[in-house]
Length: 149
Image 1 (cartoon, helix red, strand yellow):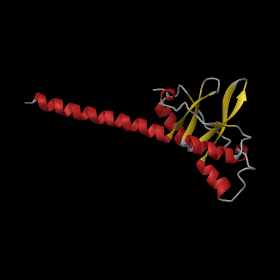
Image 2: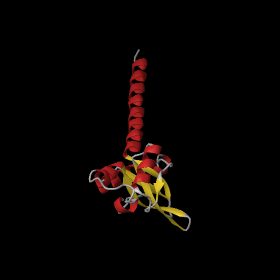
Image 3: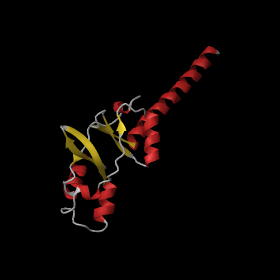
Image 4: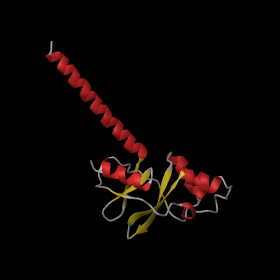
């Protein structure tokens, strides 16, 4: 199954120049733990960074910095790990594990932002798959019992 089928396509985006205050407000408004920093290149939104709620706490709130002065560009994670939309689930899990990330923006062939995939999304998918397997086992057991009567 390609990642494009399970990624969240409603991504909250910001620009490098947006303030930390604006970013925190957006995260609260949309009930998300991250925003993707994008640049517009020839009409295509290219992800260039990510900021998480943890980044806001560790980098701005804990040292008591002014969140109206600092921008997303000041604290964003610059070495952004992304995954192509046609990548498979196992491939993406291995990539996320290698990179040590819990979230990855999903991009198209041109590098444009398509969505975002989180560890939570993958856990939900895998839980559904395990439940389906458990139901299969239960069904087979019932079938066998019915055939033996």
